[in-house]
Length: 171
Image (cartoon, rainbow, N blue to C red; front, side, top):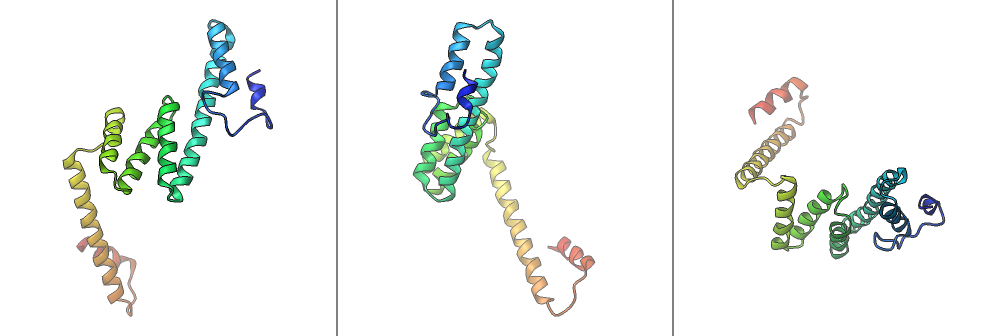
């Protein structure tokens, strides 16, 4: 019965995890028949449906973020954290909340999500690692600038691949 609700024409864009009849039917099967063959299949389908609904929310949140609609994007990402906390999209939602909050100047809020991300996913670098990463980016950027300037100055002469390779080692 729950799978029938997945057929085209029967789905609704306004369904959420709390009012979705598919989820209601699957949860009902899991509660009433926990030892049946249908329970294992129902659990798998329930996880799949939650991932699909979370994916839809991520798609919308990314769209809002791309259009610089920061509040709408933040609200979607927060909704994913609240409603789809057992899906594969939590880590990305946290990353994007850190990014957006920092971008719009909410540094404390950004730090809050960064701490949560680091605690749960060990993806936050130490201050020393961040300092070294920034330093290496500055050095690489300076070297690239010098290399591009060298190419511009040699514009009238033909530059061989070998010459370019030797020059990159110097910068």
